[in-house]
Length: 103
Image (cartoon, rainbow, N blue to C red; front, top):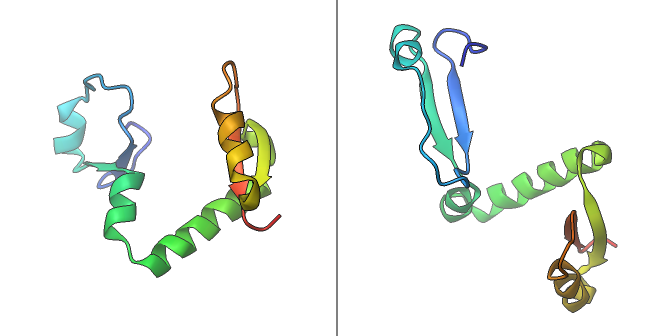
């Protein structure tokens, strides 16, 4: 929060840890900071189909531009969906399994 400008917004994504978070309230009040939670599930439910499609395309473009930032075990064409599921369920897998309709 110290890195935000006065009036800035801190986006909190996910909350997968399931543990309470602690924030210094003085920073929120005196600097007029906003704390806002976001989640992919809510975005999918509340966004238009066109917005979701554009968002997915943007996310893929970003991911493809910096592949070194992602630990990908394998990428499968959508037609090989069953193989991708098998690979995703293998014990000890450390990276993501990607499905791609462009292969």
